[in-house]
Image 1 (cartoon, rainbow, N blue to C red):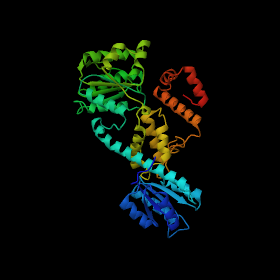
Image 2: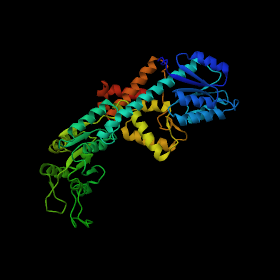
Image 3: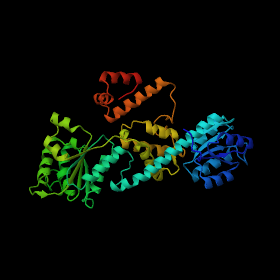
Length: 454
């Protein structure tokens, strides 16, 4: 990729001969030159160069690194998105580790190899451009957050979901959200509520899988005082509490059959009776439900009522996995980093290129919930200002890593496709094989060949 002629490159170097050599080598850029910290910071403030090459041995400490590291720290505090490429011949390994942990984009050892440094500079400009584009996407996403509460996305797949929710929100029909665990079903249920005429009334949520079967009926329908041992007072259930608002039934596929009958009766008649009560209570509530289970298969197996399904699924919205939401992983990662850094570790300022590459490459089987948890842990445990792929426990990352040959590239593409198929089908081998257009035995052979575990 050829850099834009107007792209500004700041070279901070006190050796006049090397200044001339670098200026000549980078005639594709608008090259700015500074020989000390003061002049470098003046140019940073006035010209805002996206990329800086920085010699650590600057006056008044040309034989050390103290002035160079002070310059690096100030540059990143003034403009954290600047890509700083650090150079030094002093204790190269120790300086490299310290520079990267302090937020430098990359490091190279003197004497300078112009071709190698040129490659690093081009990649720095490319990454800066990508990050700028992501920031523009974040700004564009702002309007969508106001539509669906707190939904953050720039992916066309999720924007389609958002448009669907906007259209159905004011139609007083039951909505079923289908998606894998961690895809944000409750967030979207709240989006339905906030976009509806019921937004000023209560949003009541209950996770049907998290409550023991013998207690779920009481949680949903409430009970009268003395209805059973321990019922020391009359208690309203979740359905009754949602009167005038929205009731969100999460993991609705886990409701036991006997209770499905009672729920169906409520949906047909819109009245309930508390446990131990005989007085019918009219309830006006909008039902939104969600599940990661295959309800049609459960209907065939006799574990979910077909008539209840059609009452709950007047509108069905399928939620894509994070792996299917192109570009959302990095967008959400930056959102979570900003949020958690403010709360838990203000010193953390951003991501290393390896971390962004790893986030893009990871199949995210746990979806947005997994991403959020990894970011929270990484922010808490980070020792430097920059989150690395290792901090996220995603390996080393591979920012534009070139495979050794075509065979290796094909194998890596196979691995990535298999991981994505397994993530989208929640590790169902048969469905993943269909998605990949191969047979189950072939998929098993590939899993064994590449050392992948479903």
